[in-house]
Image (tube, rainbow, N blue to C red):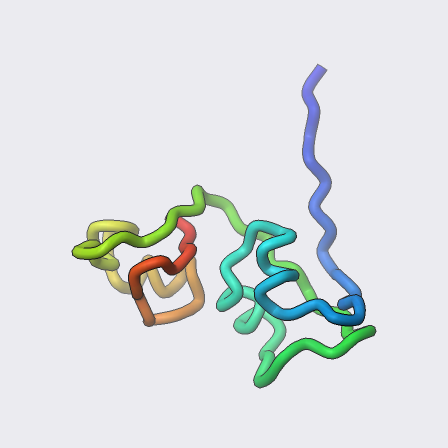
Length: 94
């Protein structure tokens, strides 16, 4: 018997939740939520957001690492993570 995980496609923001908290709850980098939903500010209670489907392994960036080292190329890094920024401590998808 094969078990599968069901990941919701949408989520309604609860009072007091921040973008970082929602992203963390679904193991997503916050920048992916921003890109998927066209967000320009903090989330509002009751707001319905789309959760992107992501495949890959999460990783926390360490000093001296580059986009090419982590994802093969800068373009692939930006495609998977929804940002051109790379900084130490950032959670990214490989």
